[in-house]
Amino acid sequence: MAVPIKIENIVKSFGTVKALSGVSADICPGELFFLLGPSGCGKTTLLRHIAGFYTPDSGAIYIDGQDVTAVPPHKRDTGMVFQSYALWPHMTIAENVAFGLKMRNVPKDEIRRRVNEALCTVKMEDKADRKPNQLSGGQQQRVALARALVVKPRCLLLDEPLSNLDAKLRLEMRMEIRRICKDAGLTAVYVTHDQKEALSIADRLAIMRSGVIEQTGTPLEVFRHPVNSFAASFIGETNFLAPSFFGQAYTPPNGTKMLSVRPETIRMFRVGADDIEIRGVLHGTVYLGETAQHMFDAAGADGAAASLKIMQLNPEILARDESRPAAAYISPSDIVALHE
Image (cartoon, rainbow, N blue to C red; front, side):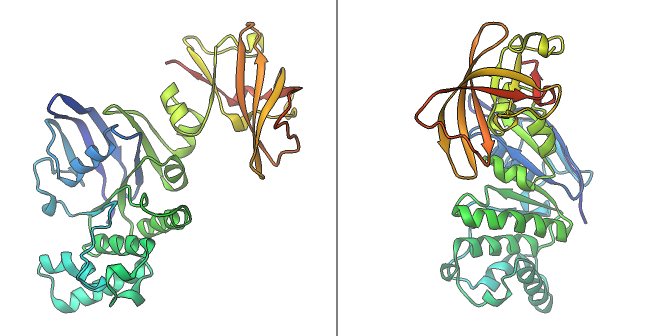
């Protein structure tokens, strides 16, 4: 049964390094919640606190309303999936999956039933008698998921589970992990540094930096409405502009320090009557087939020069080695005002 997880003001230091600085978050039952951020931001440290591998200097963690801050890992009823798979090489796939049940003294008949059920869930039932070294990386990751699922955990914790896979397998496994979590009705906390991974399968995500959570929201909320320049630049790409760049064509809210405009929202043609036109010089195109990345040099209404990146879908203009005058158009609804 899906359970809520509550993280309450967690503080953790390792020597003189403060890894977490008062982190709080509420994770809803059945939610696929991502911890996203650059290396060293504290996301894995926070996950290990939920798992029970670390004890916080202060703060508390609740799973299904129970304070588990001081509860050891094996008594928290969580399932952990590691980056390295951590499969026993001398055991068969079935034996690897059964290991946690044997440690819990589950009857043999029930072990067989639950192992088969878990392997069917990850579509690996026909590989039960093989050894890990006979499987591909993607298959080993499925087995690691089955091993975590078979103990029927209250929540599933995943630490960079796809980072060792090639690009094609990562794409395949993204939706498989979401399907498995949703079919099992699990609350899952997933650590990654891969923005596309988070955007494609998360219900909600938290962007972390230097031991704090900068922003929490759905993928759409975080991408479309970043709260500061770090969130705007870490998730996708953006152009930063002075609040005065558009002049009277766009009036930012009071307190705006900077404007953010995503490259894919800038068009080479007018769509809406309220689109803001910018004149400049198009150059430096990188042609990628289905898209083209243009550099666009323009002068703002405030007289300041700006070099904008434009992402064009199904491009018809290719100015790879030339410069040409052009117009670009931006909808006011695609301009995000940042107060930081």
